[in-house]
Length: 545
Image (cartoon, rainbow, N blue to C red; front, top):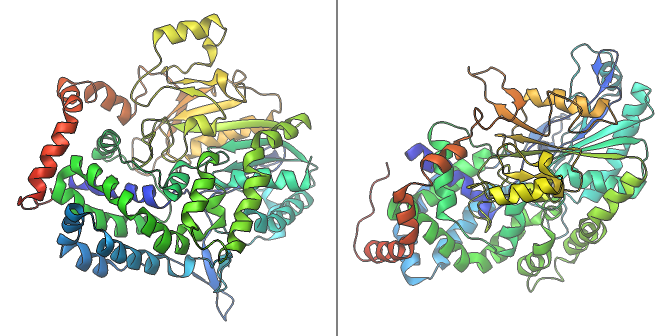
């Protein structure tokens, strides 16, 4: 249980900070290469950031977590949190948290103009000869051609490098067109690239759980729209309890060493259920302080992250984070407004223009994972960070805890939409923007990109006319099964809910619908009040288990 609780605490960092993602690379055939043309992948937050040294090599930046400071501040003296919870004065707690976080980010943070001041940059480099050789290399694969970048910066500042990379790939391979494949923040760069250059050499755009319409924990954290749902926490605990790895960002050290240490005390003192109540309460009280002292010097200093703020949260987030300092941060605001006004609010328009110019739009969506418990819609279908309705541009979904009703399914079947409903009765792709070219893979988290998905990408890329009904092995809905042995490869198969089940499915059937569960839901408000009174008045913190 202790292991599970630590995993959930590590994940909760996302509610205040971000999310993010990590990424890989991609490509397509001729000769030894599996694709008909290059598939050029635009990664998410996947590039190392470094500072070039005198010898020409990079010193890679790492999050530096002072665990001794955390332990001294919170573990050795949990009264800081207890006192704040009782008095509602979170000043001391906030000061310590700000000190730790700002130290942690150190050299990553950007200035008030959204620029690095220490020479830090993306370490991504490529060789033109390698680009040419990859097209005839028998070992070439999906990640042979890919562009990585400084994910902290405004997407505009990465356009020149992306344009040059694409030109070099086409020159090296002798191809006149290519497939653009992007994930997470890379989707933001893809749309901006087309809008700037109108590059009709793109034959297909394949999006993979992109943040074009928003990456939920970022916008909601920046705007203060945070609520930690006990039900979501319990689902997350159940999902991770039997050793299922909950995929987070590559910067997992920050999450593990910092928030696990800081918030572990809350669970030790209040119990798992009260943890949600106290944490939500704490964030509501320290939100202004977080914006003033923390966000602008950490995640909020990255224009690239602002590109992933949902439209509904953008203005509020901007007002909150830069309140009273709009003049000082005018350079930053100009950068993030430029992307928001030119791309975010015009996403549909740009996609429609691409389609009108013969570029096919395809989408690969992951789902079946519990989203960050800090977002208000904590029961939405997601890949942990991106909501399925947003990633798919409009698919109708059931909550992660339930399925479509028989009545709804019959109504959709009468409309001819039955073929678009998932076998597990949780997704109706008939309502999404690209219903015939949107594939769904269940049981895969945001960061994880199993090798068995690579043939799917090539199958889509190699046939400009392919749809979700073209390939028997790659129907609209699929399931990823983890390898039976450590180090092995997982498999992809058509989704069959009778044999394909996630931990969340098991939770819904075996835990979420029990009598005890229902009883607890009914009496939760009373339970919260009783626990609060008992914990505040003299009960000693229990030992973690």
